[in-house]
Amino acid sequence: MNWEPVIGLEVHAQMLTDTKIFCGCSTLFGSKPNTQTCQICIGMPGVLPVLNRKALEFAVRTGLATNCTIAKQSRFARKNYFYPDLPKGYQISQYEQPICEHGHLEIVVDGEVRRIGITRIHMEEDAGKNIHEGTGGFSYVDLNRTGVPLMEIVSEPDIRSPKEAAEYMRKLRSIVRYLGVCDGNLEQGSLRCDANVSVRPAGQKEFGTRAEVKNINSFRYVEKAIEYEIKRQIRVIEDGGRVVQETRLWDANKGITESMRSKEEAHDYRYFPDPDLVPIMVDQKQIEKIRAALPELPDAKRHRFVKAFGLPENDADMLTAERSTAEWFEAAVRAGAQAKAAANWIMGDLMKLLNEENRSIDDCFIKPLQLAGMLQLIDKGTISGKIAKSVFDEMYKTGRDADAIVREKGLVQISDTSEIEQVVDEIIARSPKEVERFRAGDEKLLGFFVGQAMKATKGKANPQMLNDLLKKKLS
Ligand code: ADP
Ligand code: MG
Ligand code: ZN
Image 1: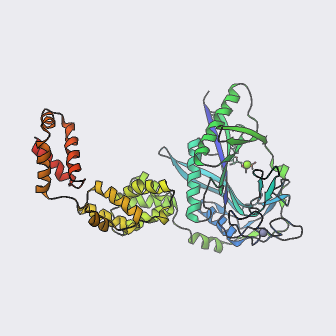
Image 2: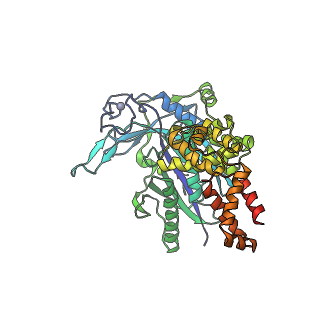
Image 3: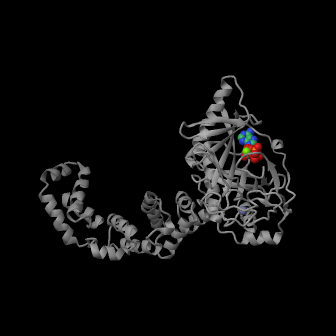
């Protein structure tokens, strides 16, 4: 039997507002427990929440960027449940009337464009954090996170493979980072993903029963956890059992998902409109104002990079995944760098060095103008591409200009024919065996001669001239 997976993702994104969603407490991460709380966010009776204007704007921004319809009127609802990290006994969320609906975004997987529907985006408050470790047998509750604004972005069950799920997540992360509404950090939990997974016989229209997998905190695990869950469900069915609707936890150490609790139904939460909060009204004028202020988004940028700079799709994709990288690239081109060359240096050497240090391109010592300067030295033949690598490393470390480094270290390329000829003659004279073998047809040995010459000139010989001379003298 051929099984088809069906996947829908619920993504929680912590919004980058300075203050909480219904009070003025700070959202700063990592402060001493319970120092960023007030009567409102710890849920004292009688206090009144007031919606943070910025949180609403961020949600609308995200909705517009994902092709959603923005509700002119939406509402908050109480989702009732008991847990120590939820002092009010209910979470303020949205239920029947979310702020955004009916959106979609496009992903490209294995060269195929896929449109993934977004059912809804709603605003809600985060809960606190229970602390069980390092507390001498007690459990504590930290309410600093209580009331931090979240968006829940719910996809349609349009995803068909673990790879598509990861790509969808990547696209979403890229968009919220472009918009500046969330920092997109999966490891720290500011972007969290619950995966709903089911399988059905290929060709069948009805969906199978889904399990919801929680606790997925990296892109690698998005794929791994879903892969495992698909296999598990197929095994259950093929062994004659049935998949039960439940919530499962991904255990990254064991590489498996484990049953956590049977799936709660919406009616278990006794949702009802929150009487403490007035309906949220957004008019067309506000929507258009927010739309007009949207930045160019990753897809549009990618298309423009292909068209305007003649870059291959893959390069454009890589360069536009992060807004800061894309802007750095464009600044280099504006400073005179040839686009493809700049792209290669950024995607190769620069990204590698940045990744090694876990440093972002924004606080990199090399500036776009300096990359353009180095590329000019290569173009003019002052340095070879090979020398450029070590110049680039030095620029990366020190933030100095390429020509200063080249001058100081005497790295100017040797393009003087007689100087290179002298080196070539010496090498040929002391390598009679190799010369004989080369002339007998072992052309791979050209590499040996090039290597020797480069060693003798400390890599400074003009490679083209060196090659031409060697071929001429050896033939
Ligand atoms: P709940 O809060 O009960 O999980 P939501 O409506 O918030 O319900 O989320 C449901 C998620 O599950 C959506 O992302 C949806 O696309 C997905 N989904 C629904 N049915 C299936 C199914 N049969 N298989 C896989 N995913 C599904
Ligand atoms: Mg769910
Ligand atoms: Zn507060």
